[in-house]
Length: 218
Image (cartoon, rainbow, N blue to C red):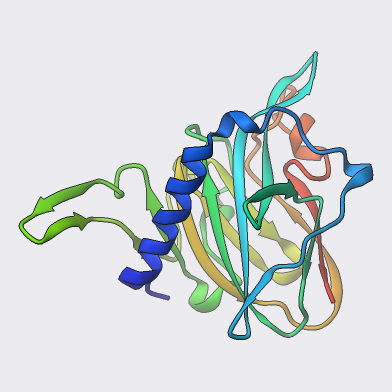
């Protein structure tokens, strides 16, 4: 899956918009008891899902801040505790990651699986750099890959039931597509130990709507 100039421009526009409103707006995580899961937007039969990873989410007084996945829907960050997707459909996913650090992850999660062509297109904070040309700005951006170095991973988006795994690099925008199949309920999980506790698997890692949740295909 190659990212066209138009698609890359759209992704960068989303980044600029979100950066403009500021991550500081996300101070605490939504109350899961009041959460209504969003449905991905539809565009010519292809469903769009945008996920945003932020870091300054207050967990509790003992743990402090933790990273969390959100669903970006109509300009609003919503909980990722239960993501609704249509059955037997192609879903185009964009992950916008503001986390600038890495975490420990088993080597197999460095490989992309379950996406179209087992590929992900990545724009990170170094490749996004641009140069001046007489006819405007030259963006030196996206690269498409089937895997990354495990020591470079900040998070993953992993759905074992769909054999879906995408490694997420620090401060990156990543784009991929996958097919949902029939109606079912799956668990999604970040497989990079980015939470709290001695192993990094407490806190956000084990809490629904932070670094884990469900995907309901209906």
